[in-house]
Structures are given as structure tokens and as C-alpha cells.
Image (tube, rainbow, N blue to C red; front, side, top):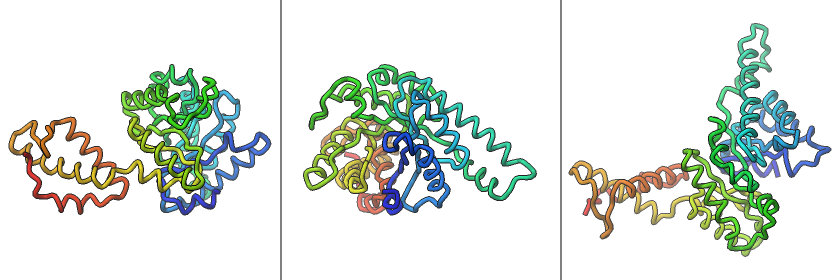
Length: 311
């Protein structure tokens, strides 16, 4: 599976030290992940993250000591975050290793190997928190405020269902409150990433249809990404969360006409018979930013609609 990740084009790959690793193989897994992180980053991979064990498990400290001493990922995925104190612990560990790194980096007897290790840790690290329990949902506000390193929240449906004795259904309606709360808190605290639940179906046409439906549902709730557990899920997920061609055309037309309306001193105007004002302009800009990030040809669409006028 690790070899398969090298050929993917994804925003982030998370290497796991938690549920997929048995207790007897934690030490081996830490060493393996450090070896992977010290290899050149694959061209198609935006970020490399490590999911550590939960703070409450008693294993997180060993995970962090190993990973932050011998490598340095772009992000840490912290599972079973029930309160802000879990993230404070992880942040303090990161800061400690950063200070040690800075001392080593400037030591006069620093070896070439140590120099490479120190330089690899120069970028700021981000934290993604997994929301998996009723307590976590109740503490979302304090979790979002716990550390400046926090870049987003991830909803973990299976553990949440276990905590509340819920049965997962195809509609996912049993998770509506928790998912909406997570998206709302992320937006309120200006966290860039809000990642939806795993789709456990990944085989055959029926599994892919289920995945696409879940992606569209999550996108409509405000999530801007989804966890994938198999390489076969990546393409469908990326297509679903990217703007459609129709959305790109709409956003380009709004943007071009909006600039012209601004020159004319018009704060509100119409397009295709619908009123356009500042919130609509903001939505169009967000869509264009996402289209650009997804590799869509925004420039070609812009050239095509240069003549668009505000109505």
C-alpha cells in the first residue's frame, strides 16, 4: 500500500501509527515512517502527515519523540481529540523538538547528517484533529482555540457511532448534527481544512456510486475534503470536490462582470436575471480559487468570457 501512494496525486497522505498498527509493531512502524519521510517527496503529493496514537493512549509521546527527532512531517493527525488539552500537549512536544532542532542546527560540531535532519525540520508543522466522540463535539470551540498550529478538523464517523451507539445508514442522517457542527466551528475559527468521514465502500460500481454520493453530500454540508482509505477512491473524490465546468463558467462570468460593475460604481447588479452582490462575488472568488488549486483551466475560461457585462 505504501508503494501505491508514491504514484498518487493527492493533497495529503497520512501514514498511520494508530489503529492499523498492532501494539507489538508500534516501534517498527515508527522507524518505517521515519524512513519514508526522509525520502524525497513524490511529485504528486502535496503534504505528508503522520497519524499518531491518541494522547490518552500513553503512546503519543513515544510517537512524537521518534517522528520529530528523526524526520519531520508536514502535519500531525491527532486522533480521539476530546478537549483542547490534547492539542496543547502535542503543540508543546512540537515546540520542544523545534527548540532542540534550532540548537543542533547552530552547533559548531554539527555533522552533515545532522545538518540535513535539522534543515528538513525548517517548515512549520500543522495539526489536524480527529473528532470522534460526543465529548469532542461538545468541546469543538475550545478545541479550535487550543493551538495556532491547528489547520483543520476531521470527522471520524465509525468511532463517533461507537461512542453514541449509533448505526451507520446510507443516508448518514445520524451524523448530521455532528458534521454540521464541525463545519460551522471550522468556519467560525477560520480553519482552512474541514475533512469529512471515510466512505467504507470502495469496491465495484456500487461502492463507487456510494462514494460519489457521500462526497456530494459532504460538499453540500460545507466540507472541503474527504478521507480516502484506498487509492481507488481518489479520482472520484477529487472530481466531486472540485468545481464543475458549469460552476467554473458561472464564477468566471461573475468575476469579469463584477470588476466592470465596480468601475461603474454599481454595488449590486444582475446576471441571467439574478441579483449579484458582495456575498455572491465572494462565492465566485472562492470557486475560482478552488478551481485553480484543482488544476482547472481558469485562464481559458476567463479569455472566453472577457466580453461579459453586468446586466
